[in-house]
Amino acid sequence: MPRRQWLFAVVLAIVVGGVLADLVHPAPAAAHDATTTAHAEVTGSGANVRVVLDLEYDLLMKSAWLYAEAYEAKERAEQLRQLKLNRDAVIDYVTRRFDVAYDDKSCAPTTVGDADVRPRGRTTFAVLTLAYACQGEAGGVHAISSALFPDNESFVHSTKTMVRYDLDGETSSAVLDAGNPTVRVGERPASHQAGEFFLLGAEHLLSGLDHILFLVALLIGARRLRDVVVTASAFTVAHSITFLLAAMGVVDVPGAIVEPVIAASIIVVAVANLLGRQEDKLGRWRLPIVFAFGLIHGLGFAGALDIKESGSWQLLLSLLSFNVGIEVTQLAIIALLFPLLVLLRRTSAARWAVAALSLPIVAVSLYWFFDRIPLPL
Image 1 (cartoon, rainbow, N blue to C red):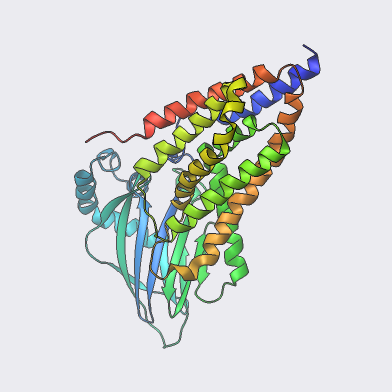
Image 2: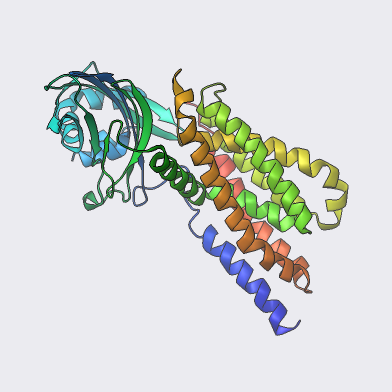
């Protein structure tokens, strides 16, 4: 085989192999040497503000410097017991890192009821409800600040806090991080909000390696540019539909169902690539299969936002910007990988390379599938 042909095959295999090297613990169950997203829902007006925080349970307990028996608790009853037992330490940590101000004066926080826990995908989040009492003249401006789980605590890096607020008649959303830790109600233009959620969508796709592998598997099976355009369009339309419906709370499918099916979708597409000559027999089914699996992937994308309140149509800009971020990143991946695949397909290494790229994808996806099936309690 000519040296140049082998070079194309080796380069492409290295690219995919480098991605797979990070998949021992697949998304979304990210390790705490990675990153996390906190969620905050802020409502109220004037002197009275209510905040509901969703924070990763084990990360919260570690950050509050509690013992291993607290952050290693797995059963719901034990997690609730630990939250109640360590209430003061948890609240002290959170209120030092999350602030509501009124006319630049910090509001006084108090807890409302006991903490709760709930799943987000395969991760358990602690749910804390706080009431903030603010002082100042009527007509002032609220500001929301978050420094939750900073880099210097070493448990995670690049933490983002996704804030949804309905304050003083203003309904919007914002993404807070170390570079932009504060949002002042009514002072952030729509273009800034759109840019934040565009970047969040792009980052979500890049960190969602299962979605990337599905896209790579589709590209491996595409033989012409027309195949790529039609297949990518079907996938885009399908996941956009369910993304918007799920993010708006119109449909609600548990992550315990969605995530194993996403893994299964990658297996199906990668196995189809391995069938080689049988591909023509599968051709008429390829588009509806991709569309069906795209609907499932859309549910996975929606889990990153979790916008489900009745007034959420006012947050449509955030949803659309997030989705556009996903689409642009998806197109960039296609533009990067498809030309390499076209060159490779023109060489005698094509059949070998398809198997070399598809088999690892099948293996990793099988691991994901069984790992994501919830075990009975």
